[in-house]
Length: 217
Image (cartoon, rainbow, N blue to C red; front, top):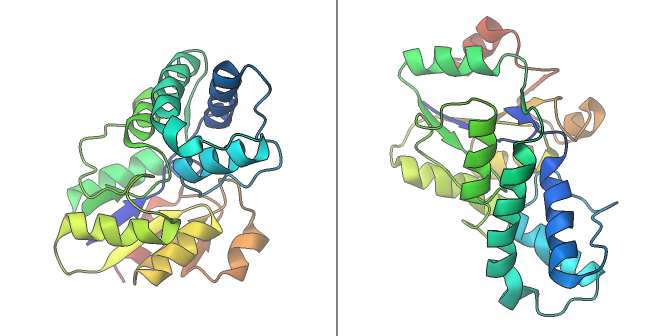
């Protein structure tokens, strides 16, 4: 079985360091405030967040500036991660260990750039090597493109479970034929997640045995 995980709000919490780092990068690039306040962030692709932020702040050439932003943002994030504690969310370490003991393949489906997503995982002390079927924020134009990309990386026709904390995880997972576990440890609350009808809705992933039993149904 293929098990796909979102990163932010699902595997770890990084105190909003990604948003802060984007704001700091934009401010350094354009010498003016680059606030993301009020913008929808959770579950979205980093390149689209960059595009929307540029439009908000009257910057027309976001496409030509994207590569420069990406490299500068990566370095700002690297420095900021050194100054905070990235917290692994409840049950994650136990669930990852248990899944690796079975006949499962692990993957990541996230709006992060590859380098920044891996950086966050390493900062949290998560071993990234077991995640082999991955989709990053540059692997599609919208979130719905990501689960099919990760499934294609796996290349084996078998059941897929996607675990995430936003409505975008649920809807994109269902669109790709995945069963979806929605977890209330991120940016979307239980009522919001319930409205999009995940296959399983949990407060967190702390009950490893119950999660494993459900996955194996």
